[in-house]
Image (tube, rainbow, N blue to C red; front, top):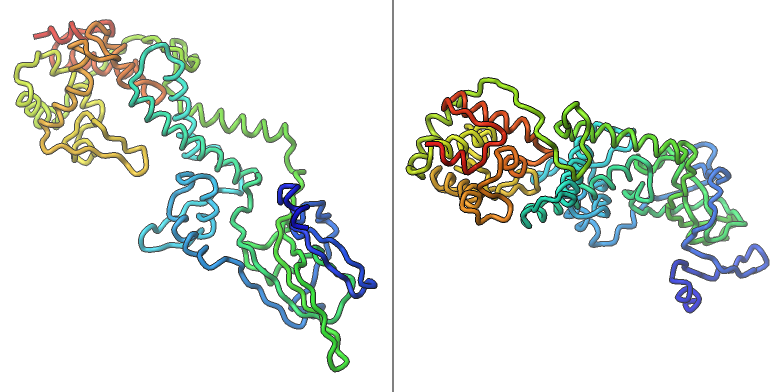
Amino acid sequence: MNGIQSSIGNINSFEIHVDPIDNYVARIIDVNYTGDDKAADLFQLQVHNTRSTVRSYSLQSQIFPNQSSIIAIGSQAKGGQLGIQNNTMIDFNKEIKDRIIPKKTAGKTDDLDDNNFIVTNSIASIIQLLAVLNSTEPAAVADISNLIAKAKNSLRDIIIYFQTIFDSDGGRRNIIPIQFSFEMDGIGGLIIGNLFRINQDILPKGYKGKTLAQTVTRIAHTLQNNDWTTKIDALNIILDKKRGKFEIGDITSILRQALKNAIDRALPSITSVGGVNAPIGVKLSYSGFTPFPAPKTDIIRDTYEPALNKAFPDFSRGLKTLMAAQVQLEGFKPGTVAYRTNNPGNVSTDTSQSPPKITTFPTLEDGIKAQWNRVLKGALNNTSKIYTSNMTLYDYLYRYAPPPANNPTSYTNFVINYFKTNASIDITATTTLEQINAIK
């Protein structure tokens, strides 16, 4: 038997069963049942009611000794972080709260929620990576590596999300094996491998439904004091689910609509003149200037600018204004990570990843120096592989804050209006970094 099992890849587990009721006929039983389960025709055994011939029964989980520790540890991570299989551990501890991580994540299986936050942001991360990879403009290796890491996690989250929706092969991954043992009035004709169901009211909540059955793994008969009893052990088995609810075309249509809705929300800024969506990898043109007041905030005037003047007293007025405008638009204010960490340029900080990557500087002046060293120093000295001194303001900001997460035209217009409102300086989208640096 072992040789046969090995030769066919050990997908079966053969055992010999001799049936004393059927003239001691010997049968080869495949314990790893993979055939047609004929789910619609399964007999339902009545247990613990007035129609039952079952005298006693028990339900016992079949978790091996160390598995409980594996479940407890593995379930602490959020869905997708440790791979698709890790979600089994999360589902085991669904709704359980502890002192360390009070919230467990679990897939949503009731409907197709195309407003799901994870799907929307995951799609945006993948599209942003494709845009950079298909672009003809150079990109920093560190930036590409970061985008690749985010896209890998996003793709995994999307796979998990749709697995939970459409009952894929990963569906019902959270079923812990249980052994159903019972003793009943004597009965013949059963063999190892037979399938049956039991009434739902004695099953735990997670085991109810038409997709679970029991398969016989052990049979024993006893004759004593003119009484015949049969003892049976059975393990739960997941039945193949017939997919009559959705046709392939229906699923494709639902997925297409869900992805379209998510993309529409994730890419509100990827529009060219006329509002037409730009293809991935095609650089968006500047869509025109819109004047509006852009006064500096109190925190820029009272905190950032004094530190900037202290860190770089000899910088030109144009360069200082550009740095202040970017810091204001990036949201430097009390309560933000940038403010708490003295890191106005968010240098080496990424709060979107888990765990967040945070870089802190001892003083605001140190943070401003890091902001200068990160981009503008290399651009104006022409030592950067990405930025150059003859780049236009729009090209510089397009590279600094690329779509789809940002709108380069809006960013450029804010900087232009910031110069006009606060320094009475007129610049345009085509003004170069070198020209801005020359403004005294």
